[in-house]
Image (tube, rainbow, N blue to C red; front, side, top):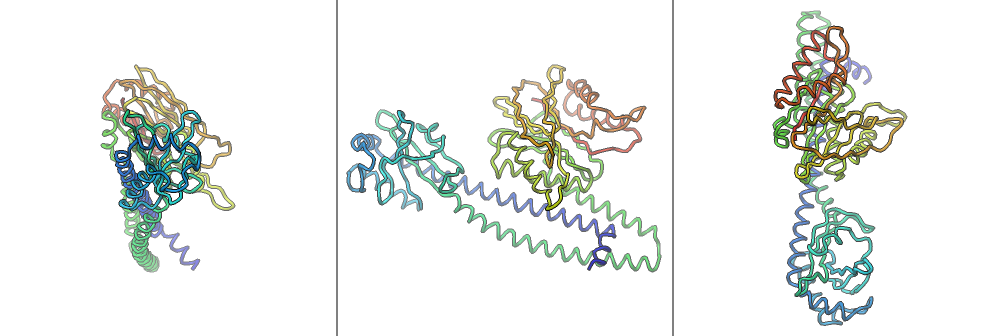
Length: 494
């Protein structure tokens, strides 16, 4: 077994096939995970819409004046102990119970009154067989107070009884004053069970596909090893063998490039968010450890340039893990503040690369922005990579925290910086590959100081021309020297 494994790892063609297989596994895991969280989000949205519709219907049916009379008449806790004790209570109880049965609601529907003097919520009428009249509603979400007069939905929130979805609507009297709210809840665990069932089906199909690919891979590896052994024995046409293996390597890495490119947003999608923008993306090898990322959530735009450890295939694999986990921070963990996203990403990456008894030093530097197009408010957090803002031919540097994402001895929470942007402001996010490049007459580094000056000098040009000038300057500076690292520069104009 050990000899076979050595032969497989020794052969460049079989190593490339294994890399392709691992890349394929990464894409499959990413697809399954994305599908899982998408299904979960869709089911959550659908249930919130249903709860909101029922709550609004009940708010239109229930007489606010009758409820006000009930509340003013029975002023003590447990002053109502049965559903038939008060005709008013009984009527509203049946209205709630009817809505529960018609809409197949499994949880209790209840009404709440907010006491402004003591700043507390109290239960009134519910669908429970035993009333809990005027009991205090403990640990209520703040949104219940903020939207007491208009109603709202409450996405996933956690209490001592589990994770819940809720919706509520105000009950008003004839004068239009809110006298109570009617609230409906749904336990989130039921959705997780449903999505897990769908996830299991998808995973089973994926496992079958992976097994088929693995069988094909093993057959291919076997053929390659036999072919290599026969070639060594016969010593026929060594030049042709080298050319064939080179082509296999290039084709395999080119295929890995297609996989990586499928994870990157189209450059045209960047222009959907920022009409004037560009991305200069220049991998050192066919695949890259640098990548750019952009998402829209709640009418705000999140974008980043991420520089992973290494370049080529190892860097590309690290970038795939980074891409998957930054999406998790936004969609699975519902994080919105840029510093919170970096703190969570730091934890996820450290966990991903930690092994029992050993620590890997893979990680990444990045700059992360959140931009609100309506208010022009910018939020920024950075791991080693700062953000450059050019305004009126002057460069403003928004400093990043001096630490990477990943295992770091002096780790501390990331900081968040906020800035109000103006029309025609230009933002530049980058990896270090551009200004670390050796070149020029003396073969020295380009350096960040010259990079900043270059950005200011081209800032009055249109974005496509800025892209061309940056690329032209890099090629002229590099000359005949080898490209040192991957390059990624993103520019957007407000």
